[in-house]
Length: 256
Image 1 (cartoon, helix red, strand yellow):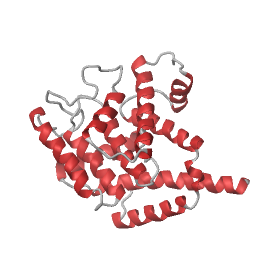
Image 2 (tube, helix red, strand yellow):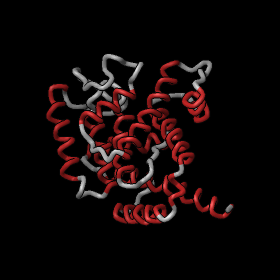
Image 3 (cartoon, helix red, strand yellow):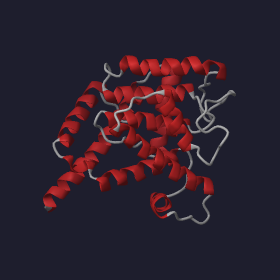
């Protein structure tokens, strides 16, 4: 992963955000819709969903069934898309992060897929495939999740929004409070914070190299207590979206 000084990255992000705010065209419904679909596609792809971007769009907007693809993958697309819609509603209502919202998002992610565990913290130990990090035992979860939201309350006015989003993302994955759906839920929590602070959705792509960078950065957080790579990765993901939006806005300006 490209290495950058974090303070420089955050300053670049602030500059890009200011440039975006000077042109509100990026908030058009059609633009937001396209990014919601792409974000859904990539977040599910990280977890192994095989629907293409086009198939994801058709499943969500046309209700089509893609031949040869499992029904669970169709549900994952629809559920995640509706979870993103919930994020946008929460932002409009100026609601704050809390346990009820977290469980609601997770409940949407696993709706129709795992009725017993959707919207519920796990009651059994888990292991993360391909990782040496061992998540906490279930009896520790109540205290850890209380600490999780206390951290948010203590830092929401102190940390740069991108850092706060990255921290709430990484801390939830470290706790791994659910049987399944932890990654998608953590990325939703991250993007809720970004949206609340006027940043666009950050998309972590699901191609092999992007996934490896993402997993390696998370592993470094857990095993070496070094979050520098993860913070930089999230900052770069936010900036990548903003650069795409600015390019789109400037292109439209030239066509006017």
